[in-house]
Structures are given as structure tokens and as C-alpha cells.
Length: 275
Length: 245
Image (cartoon, rainbow over all chains, first blue to last red; front, side):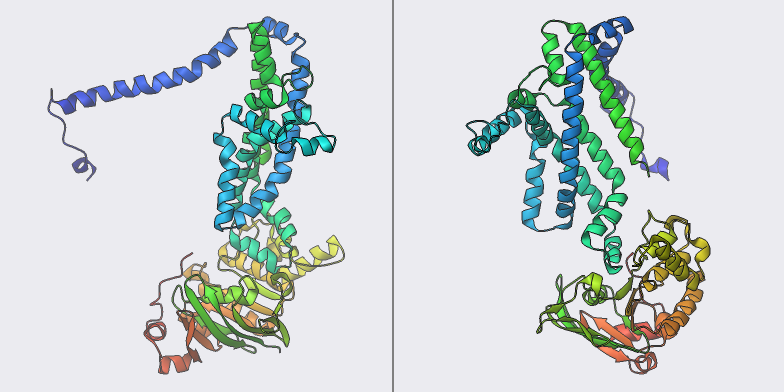
């Protein structure tokens, strides 16, 4: 049966035969090219240093504060995104009207928004002469170029990753489970905490990991909205950029630290998500 | 014994629903083709969908009345619901599933009452099992225990036998029919199977396109089928396709 379905063998020398012979070569060249493009920089990052050089790079005074600022701000932004994003995702997942779909799309916008645009947008919203700047100033709050600004920038760019995953996870929930929980007397909040969240745990954790990774790598919006102040707003990506001007080795050490942190977080979150 | 009385009209998507029914001493069996509005009717009785007009009373208490502006929320209607695939919480074991709906002063008492409920349905040995480790028949008993443990004042069963293999269906049907007699609760059972209607030995209500097209004892329906659907149901035994899962 199967043999009769496959095309007749091409005549030798025909165009079809040539195409058949070139196909595996083309496949290898094209896919191999992209593979190298991704693999070579990573190889460069890890294989052009020695443990000694790595440690020497880590001794640079930029490193410690940058690691602390990064861990603090990304943890804070993750907490903010998860604490506010989980209920929001639940509401979005349960509403089917057009207004909510528009909102859902709008919330995904930062995914495609270039970070530089995000930085400008944040300044125009919360900057001194921004939309809400004067109101914030009147309340005694100056957001730009503070550590809080780093958290806001990271949350802004990272939140959509979590929201998307959380909405998808909640939509996969069997509606009968929610309905039955309600007939068993559960309030909406009890359904949310005892049925929706436990059963969506894997999806929520995956979204949190993606969102955290995005916050860890945040550069452009942070630079524009929070500045690049050592020990205050200088996160690892910004420290890498600062180090690059003087010392490629320090930049390399910082990069390896950043990759290690990101990898550890991903593995940790994945392990925690397993039921 | 109290009665569940329903007279509602409303919409479910494109379908206009208009049904009056009463369930008391014997279970009321609701049959009808797919898309007839049977499940939507159950949702209205449960309180998960709002009828546009009408009245639902249970044992004299009004659950819904559009004229008096009464709409008791779902979680306070005291109506037990067994969905087609039982909807046990997959992350909880059987005992925790049953305990979920029990209100008791202490954790120990909740667990004790959940255990009692499992025992009543002969499934106390399954208490520590997660739903994934239960057969469909066992899952149904655990789900029934969970529903009954809340001491509901009425029961709604949506295709209670559809998830079961033919080999066990007859036993479960008998178990369920005996149980319903013992529990003495106003019960509405949605089914597509003539044998279910026969086993539960109650009035049959036939729904098509959101409306009641015929009602009566199964024997009467067999004698005088009002529509092609009723003729198929009563003569062809299993002429109907099983419902979509």
C-alpha cells in the first residue's frame, strides 16, 4: 500500500533526480548554519576562559552589587507579576466577551514591543514630565532612576509572558471541576485557591520561569527608565554593558554568572512544578 | 418527601428552552437527542445558568423566581450534581474529594464524615486513591459519596452511565436505581438510554429543540410514541448515538 503511494523513482539525470540528490545537502547546510549561529557564541562564552580568569573577572567590584540588584529586583518583579497576574489571568480566562479579548491582546503587547520603546513609554508615563509624573511627584514619589523603577521596567516587559501562560493554563481547566466545586459549596475564592491554582500549577510555574528569565535579561527599558547606577539600578545585563567598555573578561565572567543564575532558576522552577 | 418543581424559559446559545417538570418520589428521567437542551436545563436548575423567566422551587423553598427577583446562588441551592465524567478533583485522593464539600467544626470530623460517606457506598477501601487510580465505576461511587456527603436536597445526574463500559453498566445501573430509592431525594437524570429510563422506573420527559415534546411512563411512551425520536428510543433500544464526551 505505502509503496504505491510514494512517487515513482525519478529518471536519472532529470531535474527531479537532481533535486532529490541536493535536498539532503541543502537541508544540512541550512539547518547546520543556524545551529552554528546559535552554538558558536555560546561556545565562545564558555570556552575562551579558564576557571582562574573567571574568578579574576568575578573579583571586579561591579559584580557583587550587580548580582544583588539583579536578584532583588527580578524576585520582586516576579512576586509582583505572580501576585497580580494570577488573579488577572483567572478573570481573563473566564470572560469571553470582546472587551476582555481586546484587553488580553493589549496585555500581550509588551512581548512584541522593542525594549527601547518600553523605556520611552515608561518615561512618558512615570517620568517627571510624564502623564502621571506630576501626580506621583505631588505624592512625594519619584519613580525614574530608582531601584523601584528597575522593578517596574522588569515587570512591564516580563508580565505578558506570565499572563499568557497563566491564561492558557486556566483555560485548560475542566469546567466541570469548577462547577462541581461550586455545587459543593465552595466560594469563588476557594475554587480559585483549591482547584484552579493547584491544577494549573505546571502552567503557572512555566510562565513564571519564562517571565523571570525575561526580567533577568531586561536591558533596554531598565537603562532608559532606571539608569545604570552601580549598586542601585545596575543589574547584571547593565553591568555587562558597563564592563564591556573596559574589560571584556569581566563582561564574560558576568555573562557566565547570568547564564548560571538563569539556568538554575529554570531548573528549580521546573522541578517545583512537577506534580 | 419534598419535590423539585421547575418551570423555566431561557436561552442557551441559539436554543430557546422552555420546560416544566416535577421530580419527587421517583426519579424523573429526561431524554432527548444531542443539542435538545438537556444539559442547559440542568445548568438552570443548578444555578449555573440563569433562566429568562420562570420559577424553581425545592421542598417549598424558592430557588429562582424572576417575578419575585429570587435567584439563590449555586453554592447555596443544596442541589447535588453528578456530571457525566464525575469530575473528581484529580489532585485530591478519594477521601479529600469527599471531604471537600463537608462543613464540620474540625478537620478530624470532616475526615470522619467523609469516611462514613465512602463507607455508605462501599468504597471506603479506596479512600487513599487518587481519581486516576480508580475505575469508572469506582470513580462514580466516590463522586456520588462526595455529592451525598453534603446532604443535598435534590440530585441531578447527567448521563450517569455514559462513561462506563457496557460490561459494568448493568450492575452500576442497578446499584444506582437501588441507591436512588434509598436516598429518597428528588432526582433528575439525563440519559440517552432506554434501559436507564426503564431501570430508574420514573416518569420520562422527552425534550427536543429545547421543549418538552412528550412525558409519561416509559410504557406509555412505547405504546404511543409522539415523535420519531421517541419511536427510535423505545423501539430500537440503543438506536441513539452515545452523547459526545
